[in-house]
Length: 344
Ligand code: 1CP
View (cartoon, rainbow, N blue to C red):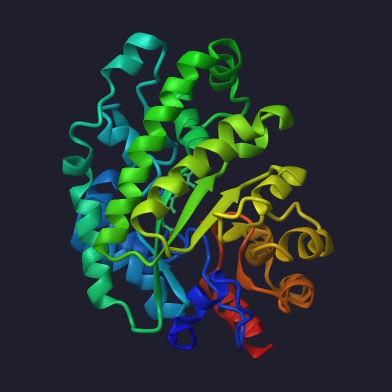
């Protein structure tokens, strides 16, 4: 029965809730001293992602500390390239590094044969979380969207200009499509397994969709995401799915028009009244406090939260940031944020 559903799931189903549910992107991470402690003892970041006991522990840390309405599985979007056979490592303080794909021969070497074997520990983490989370807390599974995951695979890590990625997409679209197709299949299978193991909602992160020219947005962001969603919903028809096409501006409209999607995660560049009138009318929206506002705290935080609530709280809404929490954020600012959202 819907009325007995968790608050977060009610909001994703398009209902206006008694208060806005809240969770934060990257809510488990280096701004929490208890995370840093586990991280130090775990070995590498990938070792942490593939250790079900510790990954479960760091997922639970922000729930214990703050009582968020949803927990997000602790893993990373780059476990997919790793599971397809691409070399991945996390250089301390530098972010992810991969052996960059340079052409067709590298693509030919990727394979889905060992996908679930490699990702088995992630499914075990989901299973453990299912047993450990408080009954009112929803569990979110996630994956990166094909465009964003492809960006790391082709660039070999983070980038500022996305030149290698765009050279593939614009110059060799058939070859690039092969990579996208592979990622669609692998990602759909991965998300289905997360749901089989107990995840209750999904978020698909297209963190770099904003660098796609508007005319190509459908081909390289929306369509691959919709293909994943269709595959997932064939097996799990009622799972609510959140999509985060960060930075696409007016492109959010084409996502709002896609019926298979349940919720749009908004970045902080979107004007609130525009988002209310054009997006929230069609779907639940999630967002969109600037992570720097949370870092700064004080009056600025109070007024920014008030503006978001006054614009969005009368429709289906989940409070979140417009992008992941910054590692230098004072954990007390997060407590204050929760008070502000819940007192309303
Ligand atoms: O040393 C450390 O502790 C590593 C920091 C870290 C963490 C905590 C990385 C490396 N990944 C994660 C966890 C993570 N990544 C989660 C789960 C935890 C949670 O949200 O609480 C999630 C959902 C992600 C997703 C992710 N990874 C995205 C999409 C969201 C976003 O921020 O845009 C992206 C782009 C990545 C790649 C990645 N992994 C790690 C870093 C530092 C990055 C970003 C690199 C870059 O900016 O290009």
